Length: 340
Image (cartoon, one colour):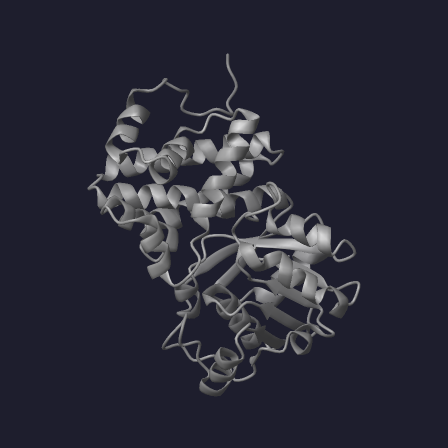
């Protein structure tokens, strides 16, 4: 495919800006929509997103605007890079502006705060039932993407043409786009790993060694796969970039907002104060609430989720929860091998 597309990226955060810039560099007609008129005008004029990606010059062909209808009218492809709490509202706003065959791809890694256990692509299904949809997820720090460091991501959709078009639109010498048909599993991976990034950040602040980090990562992966399978996803999806890849990235780097939340918690700081000082959304806190409720409802064994919930919302001491995890019921190492 060599057709020049009209593409809109909704959401002027770090990741939205990074992928909009890749698409513009690939010579597609690209708009980046920001909610703030002031921020959009400044970004368009300065050719830089000073708030989220300072010091990086944007492609001269990228149009930055606060006019939503201008951004999406006639678009072939739209990426929705909006935090979970605003995702449905923005999706509803664009409904009347879309052509029937416009492809809509979510890049948000979260769960809707209200209204049941709803992932972002499920919101797209509900609000835009006539449009083909997909999910983009993977170990993708925006700061490294714009520095043109080698990066892999995953486009997941049941629709083969969605996969083909997104791969064509985003691929570059430094950004590789892999395919997966398990949209729900890929999206769950992107949401769930934020919980474990908080746990790993907390452990790092408390001086955990490499043994502890390795145990936390692998047991986190086991919990993610167990929960995903119960929810109807393929646990094998979690062996890919959107599962273990994203988990390793966010659980081992202070570039992760959720890791930084955990690190500050491990230093004894207050959760509300931490979230307020972050200046960006850390999806893991809301995701923890949603997953704990769903795991209890479905009786899925998730000791790390239960432990973190006890620390954040039930006033339990980190040391007591850690001790409980170590002396609790012994479990199998790998759960999907089957029993002989």
